[in-house]
Amino acid sequence: MKMAILEYLVCPVCGRPFKIECFSEKNGEIKDGLLTCACGQWFPIIHFIPRLLLSDYRKDYGSFLKKHGFNHLHEKKPGTSHTDSPMAQVQKSFGSKWMSQPSWGIGGETKSFMKEWMMKKYGWKDEKTFSASLSERKRILDAGAGLGRVMMDFCTVGKKGEVFGVDLSETVEAAYQNTKGYSNAHIIQADFMRLPFKKGSFDFIFCEGVLHHTRDTKKAFQSLLRFLAPRGEIAIYVYKKKGPIREFCDDTMRKFSTRLSDQECWEFSRRITRFGKALSGLNIDFEIPEDIPSLEIKAGTYNLQRFFYYHIFKCFWNDEFSFDENNLINFDWYHPAYAWRHTSEELRGWCVENNLDILWWFEEESGITFRCKK
Image (cartoon, rainbow, N blue to C red):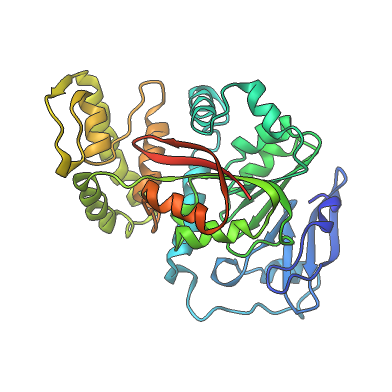
């Protein structure tokens, strides 16, 4: 952790500043340490990353405290066990997902695929437009940073500001390794429903495919808005509600798959991925002669695999990816406890309720992407 970010961090419980104890340093950063608050809360800094988690998201830090002579601090245990919480399942699921493929989106075909998709759906036509949009930002938040893939782009174009990547899962370990070469990058393990920052801290907030994996997408969206500065911009991607066949299959299959262990769901997803690959290999296009409004299927020419993917059940396949890279995308859908889908009317309503000006709106079969200004 860079000492410079201490001025931005506050206790996620009471909002007061921290005191810091440094146990070890390396290359000018705090490797291990402790953040304490006057309200009695304390949070460890482990392997360069402040772990600002509360309740059942926290690990047992007893051995860490003992190692550094802070045995007098005690953990406030939650009323339920860690595994009883659906959000704790999401935390574990995404940690497992990203740590199983730590280079996903960082290199190779997945990097170019994700970069092209991101630029298209967020309305950044090219690198020049992307840079112009972010180069003057002072503080950028990537809420749900994953492996730090997008953070790296933000750090490159936003050299005048500080870039904060927050994630709930142990993915922060990989994100730190991927971004540690950037002097303006800061990785924090935290829950963005209880962010450890002052209100209105950020002039740009980015949240790609994370809000729909929380207990309540709308509340999570509103939570992020509290940390957006006046005239600041927020960029969001969430799943779109699909036709009745796909919605029925999604709910039916996820009732089973979300109860599986990480490894069991990975194997379950492999069957889905093999099916997607087999359909893609057939290379069949077919015609639907007229709209079927009750099923939300429009007339037109469809590839068989893509038709299944968008209208029946998720069976992603891209020939440019390895099998496991494809499987990761299917696992990402089938395992997390929450995966809400929303309509355009819902999301536009949220923007109106929160007095946001819509700058960009993009809809595709999989989801809805929008950028708004406060």
